[in-house]
Structure formats: C-alpha cells, structure tokens
Length: 309
Image 1 (cartoon, rainbow, N blue to C red):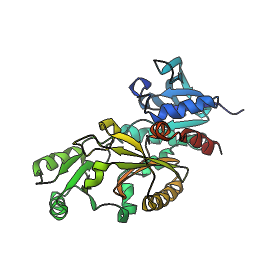
Image 2 (image 1 turned 180 degrees about the vertical axis):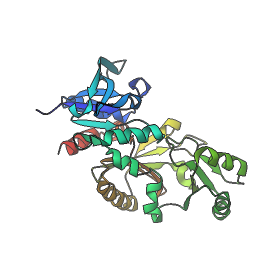
Image 3 (image 1 turned 90 degrees about the vertical axis):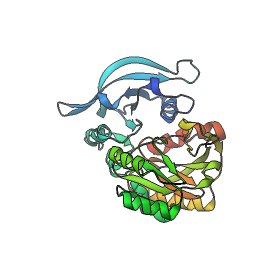
Image 4 (image 1 turned 30 degrees about the vertical axis):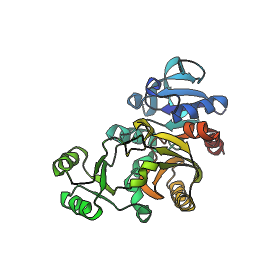
C-alpha cells in the first residue's frame, strides 16, 4: 500500500506568510492529490532506537480561511511511513541544518526526500556558483582583507555578503570608500565572505528562475523598493512577470542540467543584468506562489507530476 503522507520539515506554520509561501503552495497541491500533510520543525527530528522519528502534527492548509492552517492532531511519526519529505526550513545553513541532513541521510533510500539531504549539504548556495563564474560579475570568496581592498580598488563599487545567509540579510554596499573596520568585524562574525562587483541595473530588478527536475520552468522579476538595492520580497521588492533573455535561458539550462546530476530536484537561481549573481537556492527555494499569482502558471502541479513520475 502506498503511504499517502507528505512530511514537511520547516519553520512553524505560524511563521509563514500564506500569500507568498512556497511550502504552503506545495502542500495545498499535495492535499488536492489526497495526501495527508505531516509537519514538524527541525528541532523535533530524532534518531530513536535506530529509527528516524519526528514530533509533529497533521495539518490542513486552506487559503480561504482567515487562519490558513488547522492542526489536526499531534503525533510522533516514524518518517519511513511517509511517501515524501520536503526539506523547507529557512537558512541560515548552520550546524542544526547540517545535522538534520545527516539524520535524513539515514532514510533517503526508503523515502523520497526533496531536496536530497546529501546534495543540500554538498552544494553551498553561493560557493557552488564558482563552477559558473564566467557567467557572473567579478566575484571573490575570501577572508583576506588585502584581497578585498584590491578587489574594491579594481571594481570601485562592491557588495559583500555572508556565504551562508539568506533573504538579503547582512548585505553591504561600498561605493565611495571601503570601511575596513566594518569588513573586519563582518569577517569575524561570518568567516569567509562573498565580494561581488555591484551591478547598478539591479534597480530595474533581478530575475528568479525556477528549476524543477533539471528543467527551466519559469521566472519572475523582483524590483527593489525606492532607494534600495535589495531585490528580496522580504525586503520590500515588488514582483513582476517577465520572460528570460536568450542568454539567461542558456545559462539556466546549463545549471539545471548540472543540478539534476547533483540530485537537486527543486532550485531557484538569480540573475542581475543577464549575469548570474551567485545565489543558487537549493535549501528552500521560494517564489512559486508569486509566479502563479502573476502568470497563472502552477509549478506546484509540475512539481508533484514530475516527482510522482
């Protein structure tokens, strides 16, 4: 008998924003396919008596209700009873995140896990992009303040960001002079950092490309709010419907092919001014609900059709 349970490992539903959240969008499509949704947080994942278990709850999602989720009953579930597990908690990609991938590795040959926990651990969302650096703006990854000073002298304007952060957090722009004290403290806090030539056309928006099962499936643009250079919707950027250029499509297909080889099923990649910006999201890719609202394209259907196939 096929188990009709989809487990979602994520931040508690009360922290999610139903109007834009991809996890809810995927869950509602799974419900339409008659799957039960079992939800748990990373902290509630364990190995007990050689079994991978989670303390969580069955839940129903409904966009039309004022409270968009209803907890049905709490339970400790052995996760091999599930048909699928979706890893959907937000970064930062820290030791807890890594620990959960090791725990789920134990059952990845018994349950289909998206994305594959070994692959998530092996693919750094920013460092992975170095395989495609010829398609990126000038970029370095370093802790060396002398290299950073040389990079700034060469490019005149640069951004710095942590390698393991997310949602536009902790990103700094330097355009007139470099703040060595800030960068030194930044390195102390984050370790190796990413430095990238600033692309002024970000004011017209970036492009988020959706990759499912090795295919380029759609894209949206996110335009920063007035006076900002951050294109994350969590930072106030406005999404708009767009098409990819020939160059963007070509690069996206190359990356999609490589991600499939790496056993990554769902991913999001970002462009600024037709250049790959180095953020290749494999931990909890977002934007599918926004694409649907803008275009009517339902990639949740594509997701489950390809997964079941």
